[in-house]
Structures are given as C-alpha cells and as structure tokens.
Length: 186
Image (cartoon, rainbow, N blue to C red; front, top):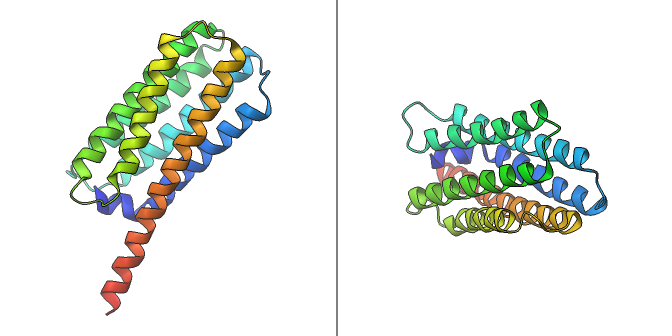
C-alpha cells in the first residue's frame, strides 16, 4: 500500500488542495444559501471520492489496504452523487450525511494509518486527519441545530485542517520517493 501511495502522492496533493480550497470558499462566502452549500459539499465529496478511488484502482491487485481505499472513495463519491440527485434535501439531513461521511472517512483513515505504522514514519499525520474527521462528524451530528453561519465556519475549518494534513502526508510520501531514488543512484 505504501508503494502505491508513494507513486501516486500527487493524488493526495489534489485531495488536500481541493479540501483547502473548499474550506476557503466556505469562509469567503459565509452567507451561502442552503442550495449552494449543498452543491459545494457535493462537489467536494465527489472530487475527494474520485481522487481516492484513483488511489485504490491504481493499487496493485491483492495489495493490503486497497479495499479500504476503494470503499473510502466509493463513500465520498456516493455522498457527492446523492447530494446532486436530491438537492432539495433539508439542512438537517445534509448535516447528518456530512457527519456520518466524516466519521466513516476518519475511521478508515485511522485504520489505514495503523496498517502502515511500520512502513510510514509519520503515520501520525494520517491518524490526526482521521481523528479530525471523526471529531468533526461527531460535532455536526451532536449539534445539528446550530446556526448556519457556525456550521459553514465549522465545515470550512475542518476542510482546511483536513486538507493541510493531507498535503503534509503527500509531501512526506514525495520525499520518500526522492530518498529512494537517491538511494538507488548510489
């Protein structure tokens, strides 16, 4: 799994950049209407799912963790597609979808970090991003009646922190590729 992640570190960069951009947009336009928020979340979840599916499908057959990547990608893509298919969803229902999606995403990322703990020196970054996802999901589910502005800020903060963690992981993976190339050249 680590080799596939190292070869495809750029997909992790795309996920991170997309998450940070989504978070910044949430802060730039805090008074978004419900429909626009629904569509932004749908685009975010769908793109995140597609990038994660790309990692999963590019992994060699039989590789440990490949199934987790595919499930994680399918969850994200499904959350995005359901958002587009049912744009009239109420804010409460959308918050539950976002909350459960974040919890499942976080749990799968923590599981992946545990599986990679002997192969990846900074697996804590993946664990922290997973914990952030679980905490975010729990807060959204626990406080669905919070004001729209605070939810937008919560979503924006989560996306920026999550994206930053993914970017740090991606660049760590890229440095592992560089180190391996230097080691092979000697």
